[in-house]
Image (spheres, rainbow, N blue to C red):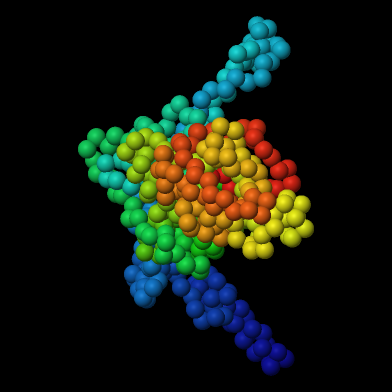
Length: 414
C-alpha cells in the first residue's frame, strides 16, 4: 500500500506539473517538440521583410525584356458602326415596350478591344486592320490614361493599321523594333497584349516557325510569311507585340489557329520588318498602292503526271505555277494569259514555288511591265503584262473568273 500511495502521489504531481505546463505553453505539440514560440514571436515573424532576393546571371532576362516591351504596348477599344437588329414584331406595341423595353428600330453597336504598339514618342501606334476596321470611334489607353485616336491608314491585305493619338506634347515610350529576318526556330518569344480585355498580359514561348504561309484567317484574309509562336495569344492580343529576349518587337500579333476559339499553342504574328514598311507608307499617304496581276495559281509540283496530261501540260520539270483563274479586266487578261498556262519565269527570274511570283510582283510599282515566260500546250512564249493598281476588294470577293479550272485549288492571288 505504501508503494501504491507513492505511485499515486507521483502520478498526482505529474498531472499537476503537466497541467501547469500546458497552461504555460498552451500547445501540447509545441511542448512535445521542444519548440514553443509565443504568439508575439509568430506575429513578429510574419511582419518581417525578407532580405532582397539575389538574382543570378540570366534570372531577370525575361522579366527585363517584358518590362521594356510592356511600357510601349497599349489597349485599343473600338465602337463599331451600328447595324440594324432583326425587327421585333412586337416592337411597335407600347404595352410590350413598357414591360420589355426596346423598339422596332433598335441598332446593335458592336464594341471591341485589342492591342497596339507605340512606334513614336508623339503617338503613332501600330495595330491590326481587323482591330479598327468598320469602326466609328477608337480610343487608346496608355497605362491608366485614355486618349481618342484617329485611324491614319489601314491595309486589309497585310492586316496592318496605324492610329494616332494627341499626347498634348507629352512624350510616350516607343517600342524598340528588332529585325524579324534574324529569327530562328527555337528563339524565345514574349507576347504582350490585352487578351480578352482583362488588361495587359505577358506570356512566354518560342518561335515555332517562320515564313508560315498558305493559311486563311476569319473572313478569308490570307496569312503570308508570318511568324508562328506558342507564346499564349488569345482574342484581344491582336495588334500587340511579339518580342525577343532583348525586349525588341519582332512581330505584331495577328491570329491564332484553334478549334475552340481560344489558345491551343499556335499563334501567328506579322514580321516587324513587313509591318514597318506598310506603316511607313500608311503614314505617308494613308493607303497602300500595290500592283496586281489578276490570277489565281497553284504550284506545278503539286500535280502528278496524270493530272498534268489532262490539262495539256507536258513539262517534265516541277518548277513553275499553273494558272487556275484569270480575272476579267485584270492586267493578266489584257495581256492574254490563259487558264492552264504554266508561268516559268517573271522578269527572267525562275518561279520555283508558290510564293516566287507574288514576291517578284511585290518589288514592282503600278505601271511597271512584268515579263512572263509561260508554257502553253508545250510551247514557250513571252507575255508582257503592264501592272495596274490592285482593287481594294481583290482577293476578298473575287469576281467571276474569265476562265476557270474547277479542279485546281487556289494558293495565291498576286
